[in-house]
Image (cartoon, rainbow, N blue to C red; front, side, top):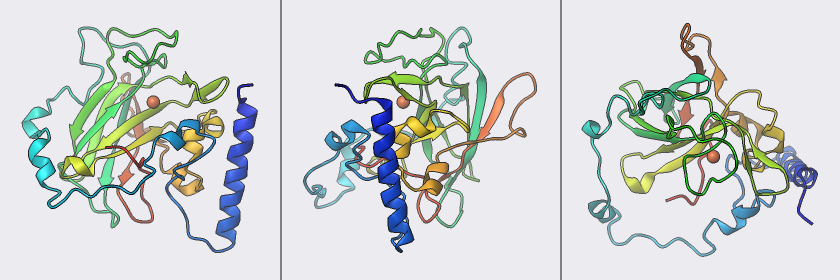
Length: 256
Ligand SMILES: [Fe+2]
């Protein structure tokens, strides 16, 4: 019999209670999810079971064989997902802005930030997404930008819809945007997800809940910022990304 949402919710609650008990007993905070986070069924299949193989002797030689990019490769419309086709995409137009910061709160400048997301109906423009929500011919759902000298970035897009997935029966992901940060080399790539405040699906999403620490989980949720909203144009969300240290944004492990 397929697992129900209730089964998953129970597993999530048990793991959270175990984490909180360990914290109460003095264990340090854990910002990253366990690699085998049982409620997120496929997580057990998606990480190495053996120690990683170091790239020897010189990790930088990998860079000689990888793709390269420079500031001139990132064009003005790459950060505006509503201008990449002849018509405008359907949905609620939003601006997502923030800063990329290191553990000391210093801006990280000149960084390539990429994002990808479902359209307003919750469908990806991707062959593997075949669930019966409409595609939007004016929305591909990918964008990129470089951070400015103050570490800032900004994207214009449409708010993605929630979508179903097959983790368990009647499983739905809260609206989210995937982010990738490249660092100074492709081997440093970091991947994470941003969520929208107040989503009723948070409690039922084993991917978000795999971050068992409440504070770390909240760091993945953007804030609605009226100062960023533009009159008669878009709603503004602010989301800062902290690369490491106690305020670090959770970053997915095991991604290339
Ligand atoms: Fe997604």
